[in-house]
Amino acid sequence: MLEGQSSHSLIESMIHFCLRILCFFILISVSFSCQETDFDNLCDPKSKDYLESLIIRFINFDETSHCGVVLEVLPPNYLICPPQTPKPNGSFIFENFETDGNRLSFSSNPPFPSGISFSPFSNSLQGIYSGWKANRQTYTITASNPKGSASCTYNPAWMGKLPIKTKQTTCFDAINNPAICSSVPGQDGQFQKGTPQVFVGPTLIGSDEITTDLNTGLVWTSCQRGITGIGCAVTGSTQFTYADAFTECNNLNAGSGFANLTNWRVPEIDEYISTFDYSTENPSIDQTFFPVTDSFNFKTNTESTAGTRKFNATFIQSSIGTGAYSDLHYLRCVANIEPIKNKRLLNNGDGSILDLDTSLVWQRCTAGQTNLTTCSGGTDMILTWNSAVNYCQGLTLGGRTWRLPNISELRSLLDFYLTIGSPGIDPIYFPNTAIGNNQFYWSSTTLLSNPSQAYVAYFGSSSGGNEAKADTINNRIRCVSDF
Image (cartoon, rainbow, N blue to C red; front, top):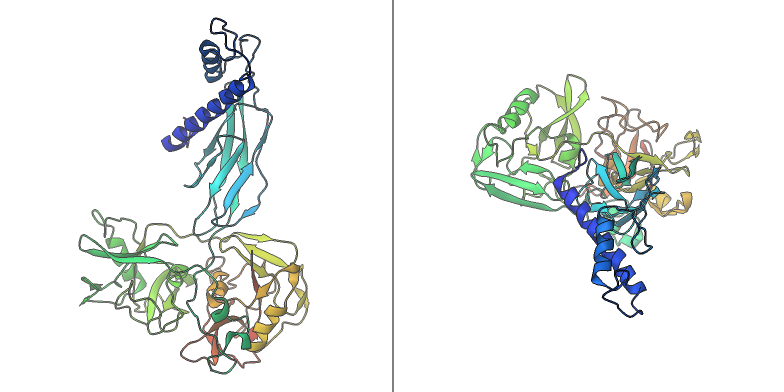
């Protein structure tokens, strides 16, 4: 067994090998099917002994001649992995590996994720990638037979899923009135883009209740900490400093662990964001799955100022803020998978950037900047919300169809881990992004409690709240497109 190869992948390889043998001898049988059988002639292709002899030679990579037939084994002198080509999440993947060898067995170190495997009929892999975020693993692919082996490094660009839907289904005009979507086309309520939230829970494991996010794979404490019991009915001490929050979540790992899990921790800010529900407020979370949730700040593990301040998630109106380590905030613990803190971005070379994690394509430069290489020249466009929606609807950059991003999409571009503090976006891929005070970027999502306002993002500190739709001073535009 190759190092890093699981027993499952070894069995899979054996099955693939047997299938190749079967296909080989079906072809031999068909090629001689029009000839009469001479059972006393060991060289008769339709005799049992003839086929058994070739099968044994094939299995043992035996190149000795049998009745003039030689099953030649060619060693692979090289193996070329396919180039990095973005593959949409949930779509069928087929990528070919180039080599000069034959009768090869393929292996991957480490093994591929579930759903992706080598084809039994060709030098290729196939399957479907369905991870929440883009693949980050680099694989060593080895093609081998008894005469030799060759390897190459494979760095696939399997993309993640779209950001979570905001669940906003109503359209609004530029003031504060519900409107027919066609009157202000291009807003969140019309397109309703994204991946639907899918939670399961509260699930009772012993005496512990958990809620599972089937998109992200995260497992949450159904109750915020300090509240216990079926349906989160029993209240205790519910607010924590960061030190106390760390201890609280870590204590859940004692013994067999809370709900039999032993990797509980304080959530990162983007993990809390994945639970936001923009179709409701106070609290802006689905209480079917997270009962009795308070609306105010929740403690995170994500630093906003090194050593002194952490981001917090606020469930009043699905907003992002910061607070001192010593501030008392609410807490919900999370488990099951480790956070991914680096982004996977690709420059398309046409003024757009592909975010592999979210399968979204972004306008590289702030609207109004004229040099698409350096994002310089021109002047940042400062528009009202209505005009921003219209601008993106009319953009034809790279031949794509663009729209103003909803707040879930826009926040997916915030980078909470690139630097501590500022900027909250990668300047290599998005140069000259506005990060000064009150330099916000519009989303297409309306604030339900005050429809004259819309959500914004602030890349200066990876935060943002909401702004008046009529504002003509502060708000910029970066449009988004589907892959």
